Image 1 (tube, rainbow, N blue to C red):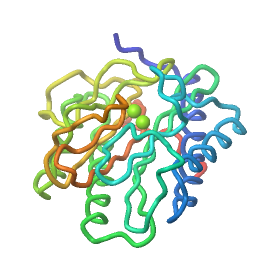
Image 2 (tube, helix red, strand yellow):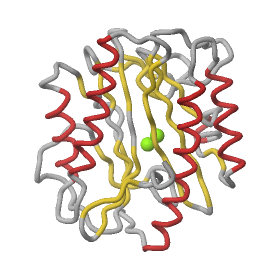
Image 3 (tube, rainbow, N blue to C red):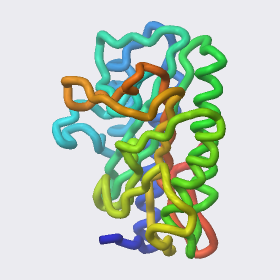
Image 4 (tube, protein in one colour):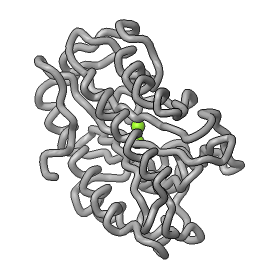
Length: 251
Ligand code: MG
Ligand code: MG
């Protein structure tokens, strides 16, 4: 069931997402060679709690941390670890969820660590553009299929793969609500977007195959072929005249 949000609920969702982006900005600055993903996780948790929120991922189906930290061939759901120290040339997807006053925020960025190769830079740039293209399709009267179609039209002509196994989602009083938001689709198909719908759009794009394998820890999702992946996510509200990306006001 899709729950549309009121104006006051949207404001709370926006505040939750402001906390997410505050944590992501700090992690972006701190993600330098030699730092462990455990240290980045501690930093994010401190910011989330100082902001009056709680980490949303910690304890979610047993996930142990505030952030998902996914390095290089890890697409999503990497677990922060003292052993995982960043090296120059790595790319790191950082995904953060927060619950604040009963509402959830969820966003992700992929950051470059030190000096990164041209292939990785291009992957990151195109993945960010996939997200922006999808966001531009968010409007009343549009369809969910418009979003995935926009992602595919950006990624596939560039030679990249679009991950199928994981999808975006509605967000609100729960971290994952209906509807699902696949990163593939056909324009004009799927559910109709109405004002008050809030969705997390999160393209996961790969240099090679989009096939996924999950490590024995049950979380860490890698590309099957070991090649690079990138991931960006925004929580976005459908408004009466278009859309609003949540949590960016204080940037
Ligand atoms: Mg996320
Ligand atoms: Mg999400």
